Length: 347
Image (tube, rainbow, N blue to C red; front, side, top):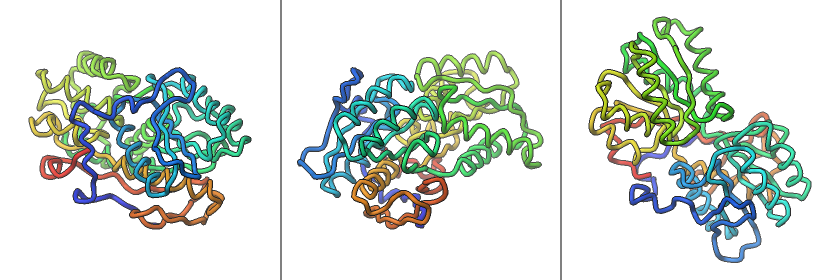
């Protein structure tokens, strides 16, 4: 299996900084399946259902999926709620089943709550590929994982440890309390902090949730600093959270004193890296993630693979991938962005 972390020259210029022109992507939150779609009348119909619309991270992954759909000659639409909650996703899954789409590409807001709706879709012969955030493995056909939970946890701890000199109090600003991916990463970080002697002098004093809402994440950052006056660093494993935390820190007395790292996109974090608020952070290429998820969905829908361990398929310019245990396809490992390279990226 090829593992990919694309270099700057391979990234598409998505221009998310231009008022995030993709925000909303034409979707609605009425649950009627409305949304944007690729034209072309292809034989293959794909639906992209992110956690929520208007999120730059998912705008980027959808752009990757749309690029793949164009290469595949498939029809592609994005639908989704404005708020990241499992209940808000159920109606869209039901609509996909009713419409008889060939495949659903889903970032799940809960590992359990969506399974009944997904099962109905699969009973209607809809192939279900999760990406970014998984359901329980038995609920879907494949999970396209951006990186292993261990790799993501290890990278964030490595970065925060470097930035605080290997000692001091840290906190985590996550998305929602039931976000599958964030919870997996946090659990791994807690284990690593407890077991790795390299982190013996680092103490995790708090974990808070901004629900992937900008203002709530901003307010939670302020609360962390008030509640923990000796705080040395914050890890925010969510693109909304890290940007909100950076915005708060950049205008506070804590700038340059409290380190911030986590998972973010270059365009939203560039300002804070360049003004010294943030030293470095990590992410994979979300465009590649959506691109790979669309190719995986097409391979399932076309019968090229069944989702069994050992199955292989081609994903355009990304090359060949292999299905691992529990139906997991791995994109690659996180990439570190800092002042030396952030200017080379545009997403």
